[in-house]
Image: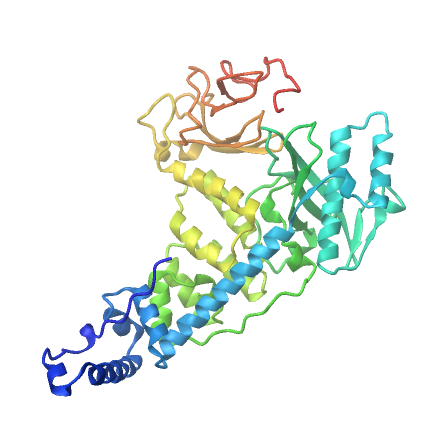
Length: 486
């Protein structure tokens, strides 16, 4: 780690080269220099933070190091130190929350009640051993999280394996659902729902390296409660097939939904110049957004002046109701609408500003990253068959659909509407996200197809793979093998 630089008093005063001769000895000079330096620090402490930092050639790091060693009180420095402490505390709490959501489990880890449930499931003639094992382990992963969080719960499956809900946690009935990934086949980013519109779901992502590996990893996405989206909240604009398909952004953090005790941070009073400096340099954004009322609105508008009005209203509404954790959902909704309408997005502002209001969880960030990549692709997309046709020509031909449980965005050729250039899709084999313009996702070179390709390194096929119905790289005619993901 780089050692802090010693404070150099030269920028603050003109040192007399003959001062040592007048003071007589080196010891007296050092005493005088220390007192003289402290006096200059004291004079600087009353100036704006911009003026203070200018004495260190605009280096924020050098300014902080100097004041940390000065021993002189400085209101501006104290405020920056408080902001830094709050940011670090939040990061620590967030990292701990993320770690608590992941569990690596084996069947041997199951308590007796869950082991009995697994044995019962495996006894059914049509049961898949792997799926049954992962389903029960996913339930136990959530049970273990609830135990660690100090929540009272009841395993409803212990008395009725076919109960509509799996657990009663802190007085709330929840059903645990899991997506499964095996080897090269990634977990789908979507959950399917049952017909019950009021069902509360706990989403768990379960992954195993191969069918023969006994150890599996389970990551809890959070809780989806349809009653959380009441009439007082902004309306979601993108069609979601009646909410039958749920991406990670629909899930609230478990610690928020179940009201697990979290450390609170007292709001910090900032001098106007300190706030201006933080906004100008985008420092400590999440703490700056703790400002109340008009302070938040002014800060947000200054950091993200190009933010669309509907998204700005959603952010303000969520903040007023202390529902910051729903911001990833509204951001995903906004990005999807922007993609379908062919509108460009200021990505840097989204990532630095909106993620400062609420940092998405791991899979939420991955999902939003795919959408942001897609919005980036809009600026360089062109019709596969006519390179001179760009976004302006293709905007009115953008189509959104679900391929199974995977969203697909295509752009119709204005001259031949049956020809489509794919902008966003998912692999039918590995479920990985494919985005136009990525080096690993070239557009199909067949004259009648504009799907996106990806490489599959499984043993049953080498080379490129396209959509299932691609005439050249499709998977419909490929003989499936259960060993490709081992």
